[in-house]
Length: 95
Image 1 (spheres, rainbow, N blue to C red):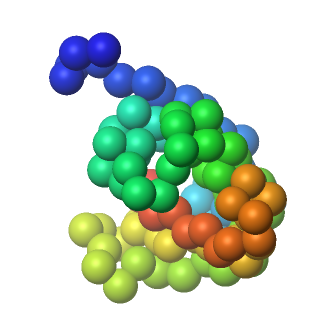
Image 2 (cartoon, helix red, strand yellow):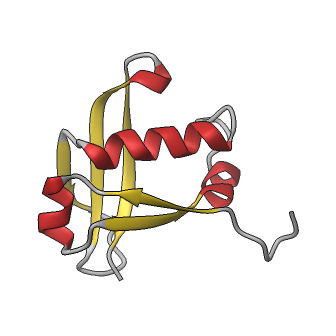
């Protein structure tokens, strides 16, 4: 994969995120996330599984304290089955 190619994935958002964002799906560049956080993931499949679990039923949704715009959020889930009961969080930018 060259530096201009992306591995994009669509994720269905849970009810709380749909109500907040006004969107039913979010898109993520799995390759980019894997490259930025190699210490967190075994492979791209794990990136996808974690995002899917978090956005489906988050335990916490808050404004991102390092926001680039007013629509930046941190979304977290206390226990992620893929990571053996570790907490996971992701950033969501609605633009």
